[in-house]
Image (cartoon, rainbow, N blue to C red; front, side, top):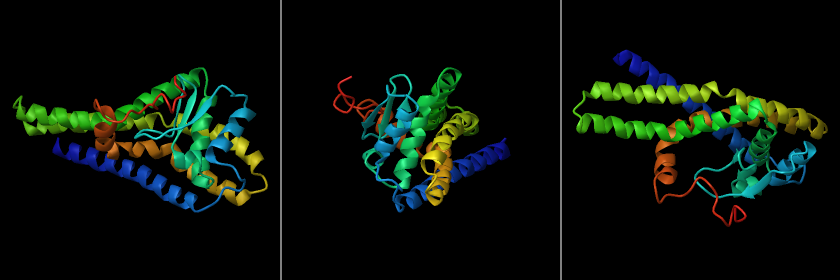
Length: 237
């Protein structure tokens, strides 16, 4: 059993570390490259949505622990200020990728909703499972190896669910790249750089399991910052 736990821990950490590291590296590179057209992340996302007749989507500047995501139930795209106002390739990649989720309807919308559930599990369940494992050992007097097995099992399940739903992210990129190839026909170098950044944007949330304590303690507990916008940010909705 101990060898299985060690393997699960190493494999899970490696997958999450790769996703988080690749995203961070590509975002840093993207921030150093100005977008080929003088538009912010919000502007180019709005243009993309308008070209696909998705005029019902609101694009909102949003500051919170959890941001840079599309809410399919309310048709709202929440972007951090640096993405909303940014005119670099990193800002474009994040804004456009999340905007592309707005085109996923029908069965694709159901898959997107399930994908968002898996992301939430990745962010919050590991810490909850860790607290539960400690409680089992200290208060229920269960052997530490049993508690550790439970914790490792929960982490493995949420990570597999996250990886197993990545097709939703790559589907969004596919929809987006078809449009970008026409829009940036005159800027092939920038298009190639965007493709690389978008690939890392698609897998970035696999790495969220490493930041589970931050998400749990800063946005999940009562009194912490909300993952949803305030009334002011949300237009009073």
